[in-house]
Amino acid sequence: GQFALRMSRILSATCLRLPPPAIVTPKIPELAENIKISHFAGCQRLHRRMTALRDNAITIRIHPAMFKALAAINRQSRLILLGAAILLTIGMGIRQSFGLFLTPVTKDLALTASDFTLAIAIQNVVWGLAQAFVGAFADRYGLRRTMVVGAVIYVAGLSVMAGAQGVTALLVSGGMIGIALACTATSLSMSAVARAVSPAQRSMALGVVAAI
Image (cartoon, rainbow, N blue to C red; front, side, top):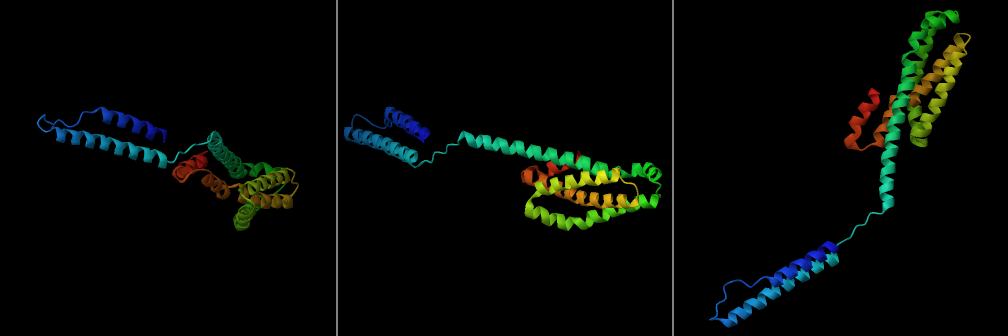
């Protein structure tokens, strides 16, 4: 609105200072007077139109708090991406490293390799079966609560595995870790990442988090 007002004043003043078209001759004074009147009337119409544009303009003012809110959203999105990457790194990293403990666990607990692999198989089966129930839980209570619960179950399952004295505790820990993986693995973590960023940045964010 202020810009339109300034432009109307500048254009009006400039228009009034411009000489009438150079077709006036001393032989026709009436024509010269008519041209001057038309020239002035045109400037007045221009001024009225610019004034109307100023009066009808919509001034949009962005409150400083809105900038802070946008900055907070961006910071929150970055924290979500970082948290999802760390959760995937720890959760899937531990899960992928279980095979390295086959020999120590079987020797310390006097178990066979089949007992240990059975615990890993139960973990994978429970992981797959729990996906539907965990997804329904996440839809109802949110991704954050679901992933926090999964992290707690993961810690509990690892504690049971660390204190296992036989095959039963090993199998129980495998089932608990399977439930935890359903809450913390790629399905929910990638869903959280996809919701935290815009569609234009979604592919890059998913790739970066998966790579980390």
